[in-house]
Length: 358
Ligand code: FES
Ligand SMILES: [Fe+2]
Image (cartoon, rainbow, N blue to C red; front, top):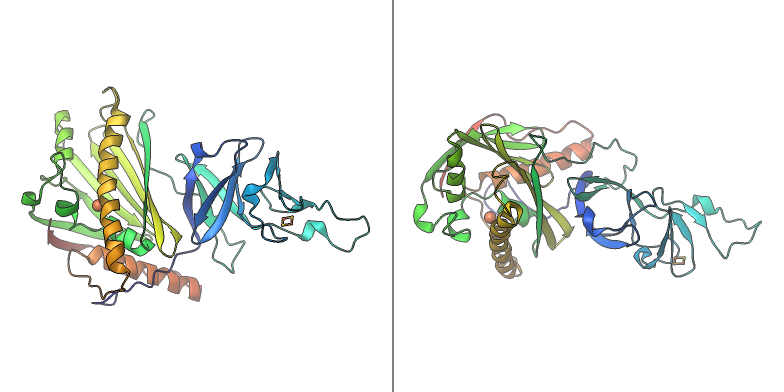
């Protein structure tokens, strides 16, 4: 990308957790395929329902293990029947093996990934290539603020590199053009915005503020007659958190843009709330609006992908594209820290006020 130090080579960041698939899509007996950062995975559950993720290629001759047969804690390859422990990936049996054979069966491993179920997703940790065995933080968790709440999930595939998916997610200027709708906003509603951004570990935050007066959906919360505040955060590698608080009512969402391969990504949106909990069908109603909203981003990126095919020169302008520049800076700083083994140097020195019209 042109203009300024920020650039994109579309690198996909390793050493992070990514949501691979919705937990409810993985039954006890059903093996599922998933792809993260260009790596094929087979995902399933052991006899106790605990999820596992293995590389979807048998270490013998590359047969996808997802065509295999799950038997309690082992997965059998359909080609020559080698069996692998689903959590460690260790080979437990080679049917053609003859006692006394030199081959050490237990030294053979199918590639294995750390895997956790959280917020309805099966998360997979994609290690930094060389450093297997690095300390791994827990999988990300959606902030929740009361015991009872509703939760919903939506996703959409985007035919662009993860960088375009992410900067699209953090882009404040496309709203009035892409998300025109009577219930959200119109092109005529453009006005000047001014927000304070501040650095947080691995990302940045828009300081708690009253939501834009021109966002119709927020106006609904006015029925509670309490001040409304909203906070938006971006955290590497790919997460945008948004929280809205209004007295003891809250709404919390997380959108992640996960690299599938170098030319495709997927947005996974997960939201929890205790507002309008008594309104019947609230999850379905919210789903209809959120799907329409994400569908607008999806269609936009499908069109953008056609433009990007010819590899045009691109620009990032101030201040509207500053969050995108910061994303690239954070990414570079993270990669530099990985290379050098030193702590990451945060590219945003302190609070900054950004101004734009949207
Ligand atoms: S390819 Fe899997 S056992 Fe041979
Ligand atoms: Fe959008």
